[in-house]
Image 1 (cartoon, rainbow, N blue to C red):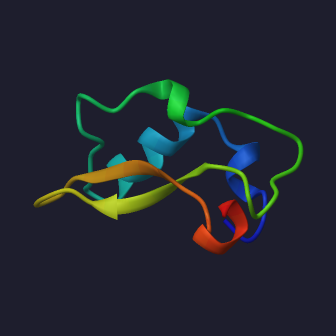
Image 2: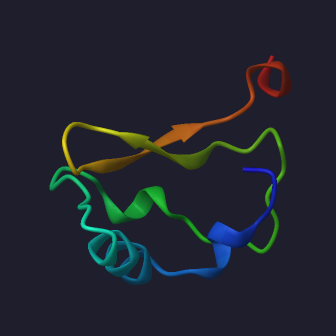
Length: 69
């Protein structure tokens, strides 16, 4: 979340990169979590990667708490 690299890849590229590493995204994960913007601010709610079981990597929305409140 410290830079906007994730804003420059498409969801299909993300899935392909996971597959190349022997990982997968959960079926319930929505493509809309990867909204594209030109800039990302620390207070923006953005996706972060987290483990969701053996071989699964899920994207979860997150922002820095002190930036929200």
